Image (cartoon, rainbow, N blue to C red; front, top):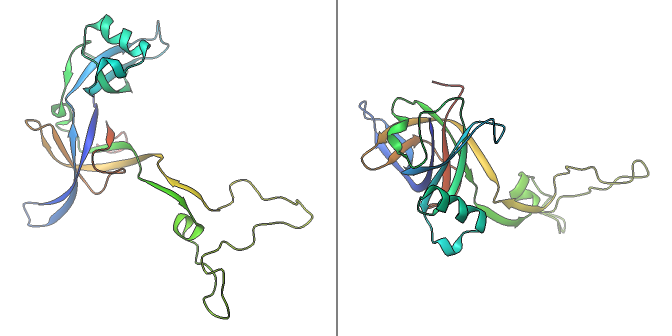
Length: 208
């Protein structure tokens, strides 16, 4: 099963054998524990649920707490499901970064940084108005209204609003290094989210 929960540690650069500097994001991938196996008979689909990070039992809701007590596992902070067709893992097994050995490309899902309420220049890249002749609307969006027909603003109009803090998926990131002894995966380029943010790592389906 090529799926893990991890934490973004930050960015650095490493050198290849040819002496080329490659920017990489360092991800602490696991170790994760198999907390539940889902099957078609009971749940309607096959999936493996992984847990990452220790958590106090007092901070869990009753369904999650009951699940951990039933399986006899320690409480975990983050739970994620990974769809599978077949799997050879059991509840309580530990999954580490070694599971990604031989994988060349991965997809990473994370929550992007929250930017708060932003205008159209920062949020959508608008050019803004003129700065001369009393330009009082340099960073304003301009007219958004309609005349008689249809007499309203269409849905999806690019306007000011909340920016960031959304689930973002970055696909086909090249795996540069895997360090199983340290539970680290180094991928080329940037990964969404801030340092210390939780990420989900999956084997890319398009590239091998």
